Image: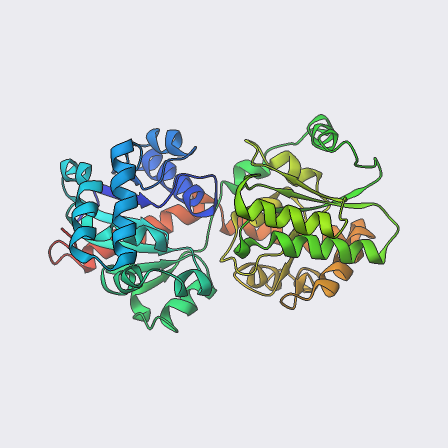
Length: 404
């Protein structure tokens, strides 16, 4: 059966890993195939215009009424009021009834599974999992049950995700397919970041000495991404050198509980060499400005920002978790030395300083990583493989609607 209609479901339209990966994939699909794409967005965000460029879009919680039903849906669920939960969910997802049937319902991220029982009819349901241990272990009980029982197949965003799905979740290994995260790597490799753009980044930090090296981090400010651990590493680096080394974290909103916790940690540590910058429309100049990228996440399947930094030529140091250690260890001895035992802040500080003290070492530890990302993690290479597996699934599982 040919794949003619694809329903993509995203939990959010934020400029973060899973939605960005989906945006890259759908853009490739519509550019290279006649497949009709419709995107279901559970939470509104800045990526919605990009999804609208590739097909129809339904934003579930855009109106006041739908947001009310969304709050009621999740609230009744937590209270265990099953009948009320189902009524609220049916009202929340009512606009989906007009969409007709699809060949594939492609649930991008485990969080999207909450919509699965209410989707239009689909021949095949696929869950693309971009999450690791803590995220999956702390899912709502109903979602944890649904992610095991509803999909016909699962896509793992990295090898550690695959191992988690086939191990702890005991999903059938022949239906868990590995497709590592991808970006527009070749387009990024062709881009030149000017000295003017780099100077513009540095001028955003008035206290930054002209001779200061920059270590970059990136992501939201939640526990999983480890912005507090980033501050800890920055303090360890400062204790070890008189050279000015500043740490710049890009991303996250400067309001709410997560921000206040991070700001408090920074201020109490006296870490005035650590800077937090909210999401910017173009992070690439910052990546080019950085001398080292430090991934301090507590768990991260295969963060896109690391792939992007690799293409720009910035060496990556990471704690031993998620998919980046596997990428680095496959790229030679010096790249492998950038993998640090989990939460060993002192060892990460030592390795950062080694890299900052030697441009040759930075080049040696990043060159093979750049080559590998450009040739294996570009959307032009990865998207056709993913689409081929989705098409193969429609042939294997052509046995009637998987959801209604």
